Length: 329
Image (cartoon, rainbow, N blue to C red; front, side, top):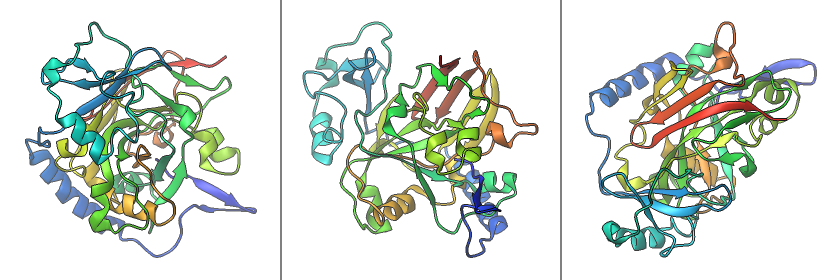
């Protein structure tokens, strides 16, 4: 999530103000982590699962990828991929399955959002040091929190529908974190125990709604289809280090975002613990953790989505999204 000026009375300011933060020093440290990330050959343990939901919108069925990358149907095992499904008990049940014994899904069905009916879709703003540096802005002393309404959720390859009069719809590739157990006032050291898994997110935004129409950022973040997640929920034991993942976005075949979670200001454990101080995180809740440089608003001149544009988005080990932009009627 990119940061924007807000207006308090007649005076412009920023949504985050407070203690000084040494952006340069942080960026140097992040650069060291980036070198480590690029030098690493394997990010994944290979012992986890890739869960998904497939089928027509509103009638999705639960599925799982087998070792050959084929979809196996889970509908006779569980009703859907929900907070209950991805609890420690639910995941333990799925790990005992012999995938080759499950029905094979033929063809190439539509893939839906990788978790059903989450109670919350929480987002973090200005959380990449290189994006802050690109924007000429200070890194916030604490995470900036806003929400995306869950009605914006869509499948990873569904069309992205921009509002009828939208002129400033924008893209943001982000790492999504999906909660597996209830978290309230937890310590950072215990935070990762509450994470069920991860997913790819495109945190789409209408910048005019978000910045120029007054009020909270939520109104620019929650239009229908502005929350593609998936294709998979990759369980936490499959991801060796969530702070060591390459993420990218291509617009009409051109790479516009190309970053690493190594340059996050606040890592996953910090974010989960921090959020639990203010509200209870529940199984199935989604946290999208901020975007690296390369969003349309930051370009000179700014560039925004238009009907017919195509986006391709990916994160190492978490799968790719492919979306066509259309305009709502």
